[in-house]
Length: 208
Image (cartoon, rainbow, N blue to C red; front, side, top):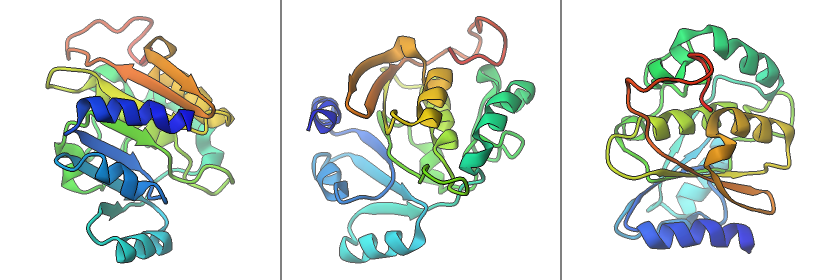
């Protein structure tokens, strides 16, 4: 319950808000109902599960998505992004960024056109080698938070931080200095936007 309470309290304070959720789950109805006048968008990679949930709850705003990564690539992706300028914080973008494999591409327009107030990363699958892993979701959440144009911070909730990849990518892209809460397997980050001409400390490729 402590994990849910952290996300619940932020959503309750900010609603109506733009709330992006990686993953469709048994709690999707709850999150959508807590943000009745806002936009709550769910992204799900498992087509069979996506079809089942949206058939039972057709009013949910949800898209089936595909990822370009596999969990077994995580270590290589963490090293290689530092040599690809299109992945660097000062130049980072998502839509159409095929050169940066960590950038989520080919998603619906509303994913890119909406400035998200809350982002929950509870998917895609990340517990076997061929699974997509959450590397791209974590990276893309960091990019969207940094590129935010409207006032305020972006709240990012990352689940399953007991796993090595989630923890490592969170520390690399979401930054320990922005972590404001932790409970169980959940970390909560409050990430401010960064001006396009801001100085990047420690090299062009560093997010933190």
